[in-house]
Image (cartoon, rainbow, N blue to C red; front, side, top):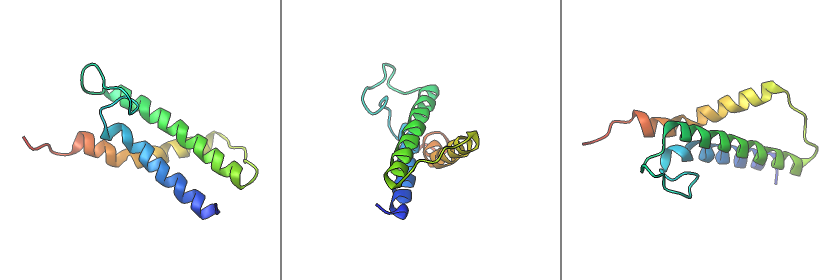
Length: 101
């Protein structure tokens, strides 16, 4: 896969993994919560797990292209903020949109 293709796959996967906690009520897409709705803290836990998956996918794509470059804390901080920006549409859909009663 080319560098461009890897970048597109990584960004699309990041967008999907950043938004899935907000679009489903199942915990990790497997189990229905006992109360029927996920709490906000559980959604944050799913975001953290999604961020870890995006990092692993990115490292895998980078290793597929060649040597993996070592990163400092700046890279991880910026990647986390990019992941939170990609999660914003799901957050708006879940918490800020107007519900029709």
